[in-house]
Image (tube, rainbow, N blue to C red):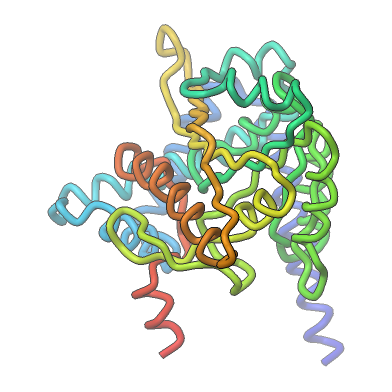
Length: 314
């Protein structure tokens, strides 16, 4: 047992050292060279396959059932490139200035409505999917919109999670770790009750087993109910937000577009679960449109559709 523990600690130490080395090494490269390197890594990853790539392919096939095998293969290759682009940018993000962050972001939709609610002291809970670069969007929001409070899934080893925690806190975010046995929903709710709080939450996976089944891209899926529950309890606005990649002007690298969808009306009937389910469905409709239009930017390598969740339970 002692030898096994030593092996685990050694493996964890190598993992943390590799990530920290990438954080520094990728920042030292010119931007275009860094992106070319990660494109190569992505293409090798796609060719090798593996469970994560297979899961992405399965999710894409469900979201885009009209595609034939060749088109689906090309889409998965683009999806893995988009996913690795996220990591390349995550490693480089701490070295960007506020101005460089701003020039990488465009916005569309109902930004001014969201900004107005925050300025008036109304809190906003944002319903996000694993689309585009949510860390870049969070850094932009922290400097251009409002202080960001969000939840982060714990990673193993713990030292790696702490490194990510520190990284996001340096970007101006308050991070609540998703810890088993702790009332994370209650912690977020407490912060959202502060006037003008902004809480973007990644919600296209049910991590708590308390989610709801809704239609996503024409297929039953289990999504998080927490954002809608918090918004209903606190009176905060519930705003779906989708993030997709775009080429920056002049083809000088990649940027993102943050789309602020209209706030979702949440009913307050005697059936709270039905009220929450209807609100989550409205958010899923917004996410589903972006997923179908920009499928390659949906970095979903876990089970989310009911048919896959049921197969795992079986």
